[in-house]
Structure formats: C-alpha cells, structure tokens
Image (cartoon, rainbow, N blue to C red):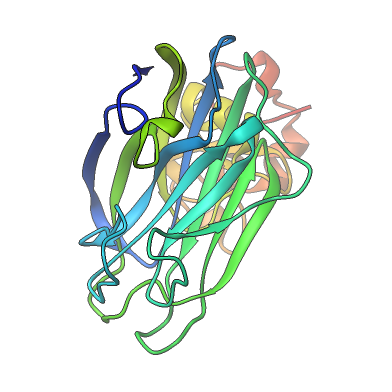
Length: 258
C-alpha cells in the first residue's frame, strides 16, 4: 500500500466490504509489515470491523453505526480506535497498550476481536487487539450498537495518515505491506502459526494446543469434535496430537506444530 503525502496526511483509502453474514462476534486477522523507510509521524489508520452506518470521520454518535479499527501512532505504538455509543471523544476513543511498538521491516500478525453488546442498553461489548498471539490491549464496557438490528456486518479496508491537517503528513511517499486478510466468526487468536495453518495449510487453528484441524471440520477440537465432518482424526486436538503429524512437514491439515 502506497501513502503519498497530502494536506490531511495522505489520501483516504476507504473500502467497505459486506460480510457474508451478520454476526455478534468476529475476528479480523491480517499480516502487516512497515517498509524500512516508513515514517510514523503522528499516526494513521489501518483496518477494522464495523456495523450499520460504520461511523467514522468525527461524525456524531449514530445509534445505527459503530466501528473498531487499528491505528498506529508516533514511534509505532498501535492502538484500538473505537466509535461507540458512549464515546468521550467526538473523533473516536483510543485504547493504547503499554511497552509495545511496531518495528520497521518486521512482519506482524494482527488479530482484532470484536464482541457486540448484548442489547442496545447494555455496555457489555468489547474489542481486543492481539499482535503475534499476544494480547496488547482490551477495551471493555462498550456499547457499540444503539439498536438491536445492527451487529458486525462490514470489513473496513481503511488506511491512511491522519488526521485533518499537514502535521500528520509524511515527508515523502511511504509504504506498508499487507497480506492474508481473513474475517472469522467468533473471538480467535491466530498469531503467526494461525497464518500458517489457515492460509497455507487451509486448516482451522486451535491456539491453545497449537493444532491445525482440517478445514472440513468447521471448528477445531471441543466437545463432539469426533462427530464433525472429517471425524476425530481430522477434528479432535488430542487425536491429531497423538498422530504425530507435523505441520512443519505437511502441506495440508490436520497436523500439530512442534
């Protein structure tokens, strides 16, 4: 992705994609690497999830819209950037981790989890940011949607510097590499091995056991796994672990990471 400077930071790249189904919890996962000459400046937006009118851009609170995106800030600090029904900042509330920053020239695996509030009047939603399988920051007590019929329905491919003025602009065109975008139902932690399992081995990753189940299973492990399509040998973490099939030596799931 190319980021040429302009008077607001860089040109806005905003493309919303409707999900195949509306869900109440989901995880956006992708890989990102900042170019060796990338400039952090004051910060910029990456990608995220939203619903309804996908409120952004300092627009007023809208009961029919919300969004959760990833930002980078000065010195490469990542943030959760949330437009919710009770936000204190007109231009979105920020949730920042401690003691972490993105390095240039390094690939990272991002997992952005979103759980909707259970009803319009309840502030029990949340957003969680994982990088390389490690939880960095969690925003709890969110009332994301103000209406019962707005949940998670949009993948927001949205990235740019800014900001609203040239103080956010890089001094030259900069670059960020993105790859392996997925949106999954539920709260998942994929990490680096999740990328290997779900993208390259076409499987379903179980982070607790570092098992890659067959994609045909629909889920990996848990009660009733032997009854899933593919049976226990493809869908149950214990059986896959006992098989000794190594993901390091395999081109397909099911297998276990050593």
